[in-house]
Image 1 (cartoon, rainbow, N blue to C red):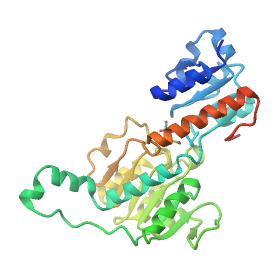
Image 2 (image 1 turned 180 degrees about the vertical axis):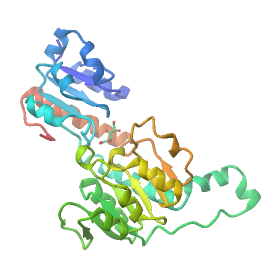
Image 3 (image 1 turned 45 degrees about the vertical axis):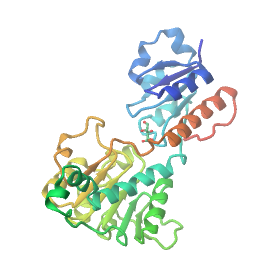
Image 4 (image 1 turned 60 degrees about the vertical axis):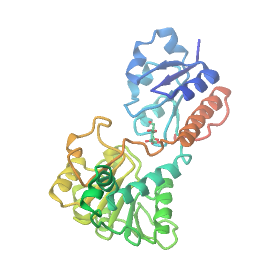
Amino acid sequence: MTKTLAIGTFTDTDRTALVEAFDPVFVAAAGEVADLDAATRDAITAVAFKGHAAFDGAVMDALPALGLIANYGVGYDAIDVAAADARGIKVTNTPDVLNDDVADLAVGMLLMQGREMEHASAWARSGQWKDKGEYRLNRKISGGRAGIVGLGRIGREIADRLAAFKMEIHYFSRSAKDTPGWTHHADPVALAGAVDYLIVSLVGGAETEKFVSAGVIEALGPDGILVNISRGSTVDEAALLDALEDGRLGGAALDVFLGEPDIDPRFHALPNVVIQPHQGSGTHQTRAAMAGLQRDNIAAFHAGDALLTPVN
Ligand code: 8YV
């Protein structure tokens, strides 16, 4: 009887590697765990988890021998870690290996939004360049003031990149960090009021829900650009949509949304939003590294060795 359960949609390569390493049982979503027969569920000690739908205490209770949930992703807000703690279940994630890709996407989206690359591309493709001439002028990005909300591992990579774009770097974090002269703000509204671009790189979860509030969005203002590569939950999305529609916020570049992939259709109608389908870590190289780290944590657990990247 296999000891590993894989929950989620894995690529063929990752699925093959999981099969070779652990011969797991696969289900597409946590909601399907209860449908497995009791003997299969009783034998499971480790889960390879991928996805953003809730992994809660009820799912854990359906797996009475469970000792490890190995998450595919740095953000583990889908997993109820308090419920895992209460049941003696360890949780691991995949930090660091995705920092570069997520930071690259954040910077790319900021440039795409500010330089209107999506519209400019449509201008050229549709023949308007030939028929009507040069594309309209847009805004300079280099040399602006950037505010990073959450100066963790990914936030720092974003700040380093934007510093190379000759930007003045400001950041919010609970306490000031050791930086090369970047400006710390203890208040996110004050941070938003001091910058041209606000880049959100917070962890997800209840603690950061709507952290980018209506007040923060207001302070960023009609010339401001909001970039979010964290979780849709970190931004007050209703306030964001209202501000974008009314022109009280200049623009947004978003890789994450509430209810994704079924995102609010109001976003589709907005010309001042760059939309990406939560693909921050989505390169062959990084996803292979994430999957590898997930498997290494599971292998360590089954061998009784120390977990590589524990979160509890
Ligand atoms: C997802 C992510 O894990 O690491 C994270 O926290 O959000 C992503 O890398 C990825 O989309 C797979 O679901």
